Structure formats: C-alpha cells, structure tokens
Image (cartoon, rainbow, N blue to C red; front, side, top):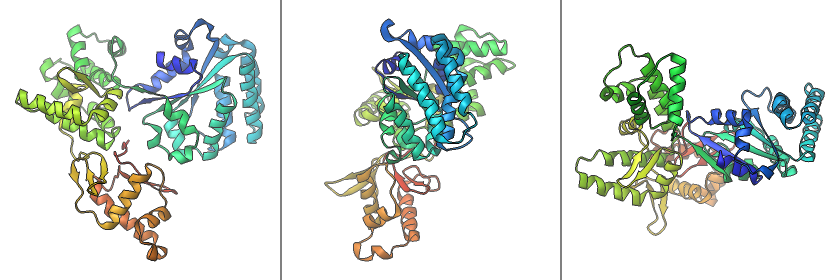
Length: 451
C-alpha cells in the first residue's frame, strides 16, 4: 500500500506484477473498493482521490469507441465511490455515459471521457484507473488503442494515472516498439506480489476455516505456512486439503501427501511457467546444492551460487520465490523446493556470446553444434534484444548479400527450426525464440516465461 501510495503521490503510474495465485487481482480489487486505505498512506494535504477499476476481461470489441466507453462505464459504475468524493461529479459522469453508451463514433465517446477528466481536473481530484488484467488486454489491443491510452495520461498528467495488473513484465507480453511511449509507463514502476508475511498468511487460513466450518490448531497453521511459504494460492489449496481430510494424518507426512494433490501440483506448475529459463536453471542448481549431504561441500556450493548468480537471485527474491539468510539462499517453501528438485526438461540458463573467444553458451554449456547460419542468427538476436525481427531482418543478418534476394520464407523457417533444436529444451514449445504472429520472431536470451 505504501508503494502504491508513493506512486500516486508523485503522479506516476505503475505495474503490480504477480505470478498466478499471488493475489494480484484481489489486491487491485481491494484498493479499488477501499480507496480510503490507500488514502491513509497519503498526506492530509494530498486532496481527493478516486480509484476506479476498469475490467478488461472479455471486451466486446477491440476498437477505440469501445475502449473509451468501457472506461466511462467503469466511472459510471463507481458512482457510489465518486459520490463520496463529489456528488456533482458522480452525477455528471452518469449523464456523460448515458449520452454515448450506444454510440459507435469514437469521437463522441472520446469527447465524453475527456469532459469527465476535465471535471476531475477542475475539482482537483486524482483519478487512478486500475487496469486489470492488463497483460491480456495488451496482447490484443491495437497500437491505436495503446497510443490513446498513453495520450490520455499525457493530456491529464495532473489528474490521471494508472495501476496495471500483470502476470509478467510487459516486455514478455508485447513488442516494446508497438507499445511505444506507453512502455515507459508500464515498465518503470513495478511492485511484485508473492509469498505473504506477517499476519497475512493466517488471515488466508482463517478464511478457509470460516468457509468450511473447520478449526485448525496453531501447530497445524504453522505447518501449513511452513510448507507453502505463505504463497496465497498454495496456502489456500493446502488449507482446503486439511479441512477436507476425514482423518488428519501426522504432520510429518503432509509434505508428501500435499505434493500428490492435483490442486497443489497445478499451482506449482503455474509458478514454474512464470519463470524465465535462466531463473528455472538457477532455482534447480540452488535446490541441488541444498541436497548435498556434506555440510562443508554444501556451504561451499551455496557460496559459489550466491557469487555467480547474484543478479538472478535478487530478482527471484523480488518475486518472493527466494530469500537469503546467513546460511545461504533458500527457496521460499518446502513444497516448492521439492517440486523444483523433481522438475524435468529444465532450461540450461541464459544464452550469451563470449566476444573474446567468439563462442556461444547456453548457461555454462557451450553450443558446439551451431552452424554458421545459427551463429549469425544468434549474434543478430543478441545484438538487438526482444524486439520483433521480421523475415527480411533475418535474411539480411544471416544470408550473404550475394544470394539474399533469393532466400525464401521457407528457408528462414527451416533455419529457425534448426536453431531451436540447438537452444530450446522443448523446440515444440519454444521460450528463447518465439514466433510472433504477423510480426516475425522475438528472442529472449534468458528464456521467456511460458505461462
């Protein structure tokens, strides 16, 4: 709450990012319906505040008129909240929405929305639009709609800001070039959600107790939190399991029994699919180190991991999937640690090029079977980052000038397939070199999340 309030106070927008089951949508729904909680983190001199949730699920159309009317409808549906701030504002917005709710001309709905924003500006009301799920919307929205979203923000900087709900950083969701200047709004300020701390895990358990009519002992609650690490979806699933067992087994057997539950397996798989290839590889190496029998060898291995993978570990800590103690880095929960230990088809890590030796590596493994064309393609991808690469871009990069004019699309596709066989853990489901419909290919040296 303090982080979000800090953004709002500065007039900035930002992204709330959470892997599946982290509680992102719950948090955004909460701040939308309880703006007074966010307001309590702001100075008394801040002025009036309204947080309005814009539901981006299942938009009826993908055009500008629909987009503007969806925002206006959201403002209209937030009538009670806006009325607390200013009754005349709420009434005016209702009139504006009714005027255009059945109009398809984007100019009319845009004008009505701008009038609503001018009213907020005149009354010195900070309006925060909570856009969730923004990642799904971002995947299908036209560049025109995205440009207008940024345009609204630029036109009403003193009045309007956004909170955007995402499962992953936006660079994995949409080509940054297509996002244009909107990319800066979404990418600069980020707040990650994950495993809970303090009293929050106990609150989740209490909700399950209330829903099922069960009551757990303090020791049982402590064990549930220990096994799940306080990750919301895992903790809820484990609590429901405990509430529904006919005879409570020994706590020593809970870990094995929970890992056999499909609800737990599915949530652990969701977490894995939210990892980059590099993160998956580092977690696997870390868990292997904790399984070393010799204390001395284990501590030395953990020391080397901390030194070698510090940036990745820090990012995993930001995602609340790892934490650091005096004994080394740990995975956030016992269930997740055992799941990682049993993962198959693990990515080897990040793809890199050693310029001094002109050698390519996937993690610590040298890619020794690359053809000359593979090498040219990789060098091109590594030099340009996760933008969309067209077929013409790749022909120019990987085929000599004297025969590039005769290179077919099929030849490029064959070259891509060959390269994927060298770098992908599963070429049928690529994470390093991804096809982007209508645009070409995007390359992620660290391996993009798969879900």
